[in-house]
Length: 121
Image 1: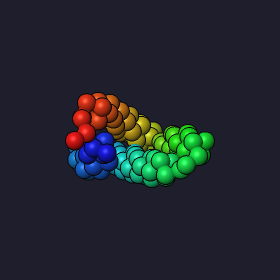
Image 2 (image 1 turned 90 degrees about the horizontal axis):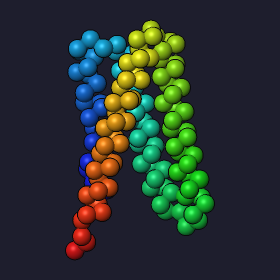
Image 3 (image 1 turned 90 degrees about the vertical axis):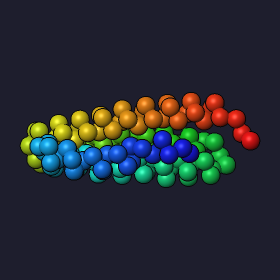
Image 4 (image 1 turned 180 degrees about the vertical axis):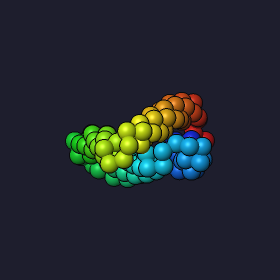
């Protein structure tokens, strides 16, 4: 696994305090950053666990369940933050997750292209 694939796990918590200092809603940014890191760590754990499975159905089930569960976790967190705080908090959490996902998606595509192009020694 290349460090490029883990960039969003580092960038999101580092930039969250800066965004809060610039005036973004603290509850939304904090909750968005926290749920992003938690769901990404869950993805890494489930991916590692799925690779260790000998049964393909079990591995696919773990990956599929993880994707659906993580999506629900993020969506419900954004909804809860928007309901518990102001609407701006929910919007801030949604925007942060959207930006983090975009970074994650681009990094995943780049990392996969580098992994395919590298020749084992």
